[in-house]
Image (cartoon, rainbow, N blue to C red):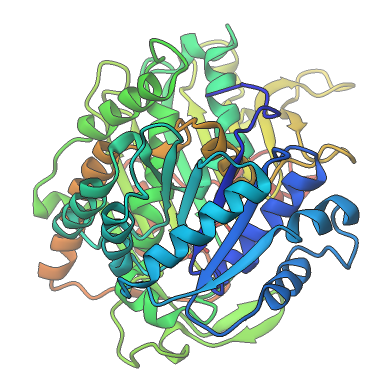
Length: 514
Ligand code: BG6
């Protein structure tokens, strides 16, 4: 992934459509304030917040300062405060044709004032059904043309609901902007350890020779959340965990783990390799999928010692909803490297801890020497890429317990990247916004990635639609439906607990049931 220093960001105006919404407040304003704090924003820069409500510049500036914690001293007050002095509000309805020339007029005035040279980022933090409308209007007003100053458009997920709707969406978007101008965000790609994964794999002699079916028994990719749907019931009823997490974030984790070394570190070489992984996912019949794609939904239970309601009792959720809040999958990648290695993916809401990890379990040695005599004492060799909350790498191997004659214990080498004060990793959106300003699309999803991902997801959705089997309920605060355990037991495997669940005195990784 790109390692370019981030100081040379191009001058530009960031235009946020949907600026009064949740994403802008929770992610974009704080990310901008952090970039400003670190002195990484160009001097010639301004932000235009576009929304449908009645607001003044003063009001949005206050909101932005509050959202970014400027007054609470979370960022450099002077720099972030100055940035938000360059924040302007523009009220419009997104389908009001007459508003676009007025918006263009404002942007041209701001170009003069801030010397931003006509470069624009249009960040569409709006419901996807507006993507096409906004893009078409920008195009017809000559605001999308990439000749001279650059024009880039950023879109958030959900990018469609299935392959057909994603294609329609993409078609409308690319009628206005070329593929090179489109930045499809998957915020997991902005996470520090995902970028580090490629470095760990391809900048070490240690791992790459072992990174294949000869040495690897299984790969587990787990993203667990303690939160429920947090007031997003209406959206979630449409999406479910399959579309909300698997289609995008989980498949990104899979492709980065499984991809071949790219020919170079540019965006297209990397994305070409990721696409190859998606294309190599073994196609399954509906019957096969029925046993390799498990879904569950949380019922009431306890999280962090307090009772929580079940999914069906959440606001704006159907009382008989069949929407999944948990998915576990077994995926096979038909390539020379991975033939025969199962990749287990699981993600769910209202699980016991918040964690994201990729666990590589290596094969056992042949049953001689210690593997014959002391098999019970040996733990598996594990390499764990810790994505959150801790960021780092953990390696487990067997060693003699000091002071004993022949007791063998699994020991851990643990590298924690964000445990040291002063080494705070940038938030995903901080990195991603800077990349858009720099024109580096490595950490954004290319259209063919989206297309292959939907292809895979659509098969699972279809199977669930046709299947008689109801989704399984699991109590909030548990590790999900029992079907997910059975999925692994069938291969003699078990889910491994996230690193943070291990008690320090516990010698090795173990499965939830002990
Ligand atoms: C979002 C999903 O894309 O990712 C949410 O829509 C989910 O449902 C979130 O909670 C998880 O992101 P993170 O960064 O908290 O792991």
